Length: 303
Image (cartoon, rainbow, N blue to C red; front, side, top):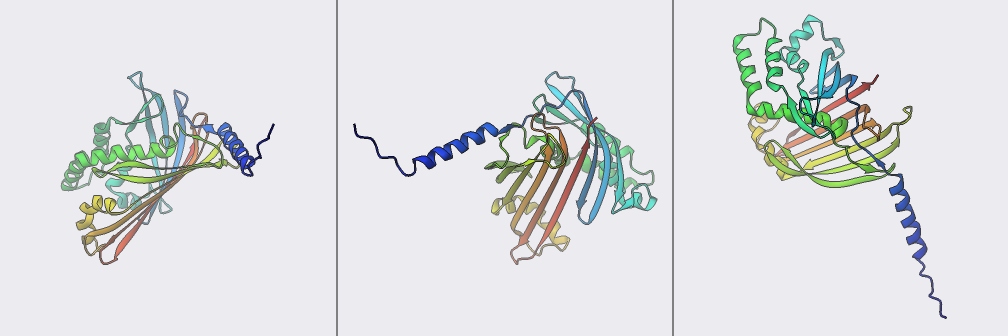
């Protein structure tokens, strides 16, 4: 009987196949499974437009009236510092103005039992609380202007979106992933923003065990949106940017890149630490432009 001559690459195929099977076997499944009820203390730092603020608040997860929903509420919010100064100092409070009231009133999130974001609850009550927290000497014209702005459909949409972004950093982006240490996933996914839709490139990486945190792992997500579609969506801001001196004409180019890192547990996606940085660059036809950077960091303390 003639014996077939072994192909020189057959051993390599077996090795690669073995590595792929081992990688699949080592993959961790990331799924939202916070205990209900649950509570955690959160400390946060936000850097944007030359301002650095720190805050402290408590999150509480509980079953909502609907048996299919959970509610994540934000309690006892306290703004601690602004650019290193005690936020309770009169000059700091005066500099913040209405912003202090707006940042201290956070709407509750509506979540499915499996951790999907469904929007916010009690938004109108939160907006009313913001108005009540305004300093007594706030001019009536400013108060009325703020109320109209807060109750506008655009602002309602922004608040819904911002809450969703927070949840996406903490849980949403990672929920349902199967990923092994050292592995990464790449995809192009649709993004709805500013009343339009475009594609963003997404890369998610499993960076392995988190140093000094037994049972926790590090994940990283990088998103990139750029090109004429983004520039077109931002065209509505061209006049405001020109008035501020940041642009001299219409928007010709735009780029937005975000990097988010999370320290969490695969079994329940209970976060320990998260940091997200977003950088946006917008240019006009003459090559002038501006660059904006926003960084948000969160530390969680669970009982």
